[in-house]
Picture 1 (tube, one colour):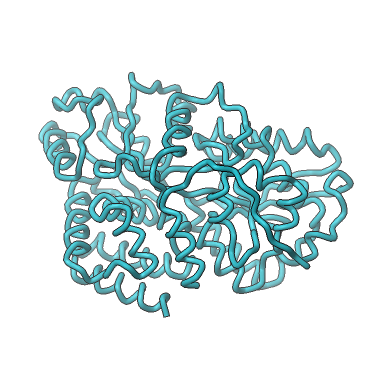
Picture 2 (cartoon, rainbow, N blue to C red):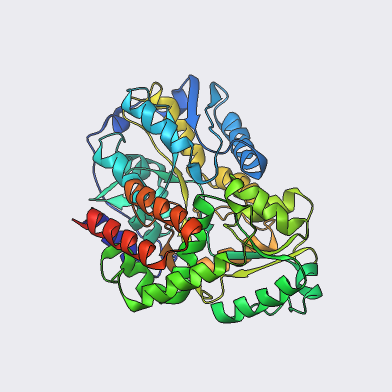
Length: 430
């Protein structure tokens, strides 16, 4: 596990240089019939059940239907942002020997538990046959590679360290929406101005959205090397710099909506910003899709910027799809994966989803202003892996840390959270 996590954390700067990535496989994936000959239904498990996420899935399914008219897409989606509910359902199905044909998982360390349990087929030869190593950034392929093998096909690249702001709320509080705060202290000062106007400064929901806020406060406070060190053992969770970061997270929570724990998913928190009830929402760029779907205009209705203190850093995550061991229709699954990785599939999906294509040959001329800025940032920023979205650590580590962060939301015990996080890191490092 440490070898895999070190690989993920080590690629701190993710360039767009394209190179080949070798490997071999003896898995059933390489002996399956050509995808064009596949027939029947393809059961695909995701957590894209509604809203802008469902719209993105629908766009992808449309391309799949055109590519493979002899296949029927079977939507097995389970609602729950970031897959919080879906992952539990999926784990039970895999344990029972009842896998779907393909399932969504975050690229990176999240896949490690499935790999260790021998629940995923090796897709290295699929990459070769589809020429994906020439179409994806080389360092992205490196992040997907575990012990020389690749187990998923990414459908996109998301960014988690984005703050979305209501322009009118900021202006009313005397905060310039075109000049975001450069660090946490300056951001807190702006939030004090907003709070004085009777508005909620920072909208957040429960569970994973708080973990996402936590990770980005850590990133802002510790910097790239310090943040990466939390996952590869080079940063001491018990250090004074981490204590200060957790104290900053506690202060950030003091500006949030009182009903945060009753909001089960991200969209209601983003809606508070849309409605002008809150000024800011720290959210992944799937929020861009929601703003667009709701008819909001960037610069007029909302603005966006990197989390204060993280300018020049791209907090990375990617949705990806797999071929499970024992999939009922492996040929159909390979057809789905072909559409997932294609330039056409990625262009259609990401335009609606708010993310950017992993496939560098996808056409993005008609993408939004935000998406074009994200493409540019991804090409030059330092890249780190998201905690909340499975890129930084395996599922079991994330679950334990999420429990500690959730508890902290109630008791605000800085020492308690720090001790729990340190114990969790030690547990999974050994």
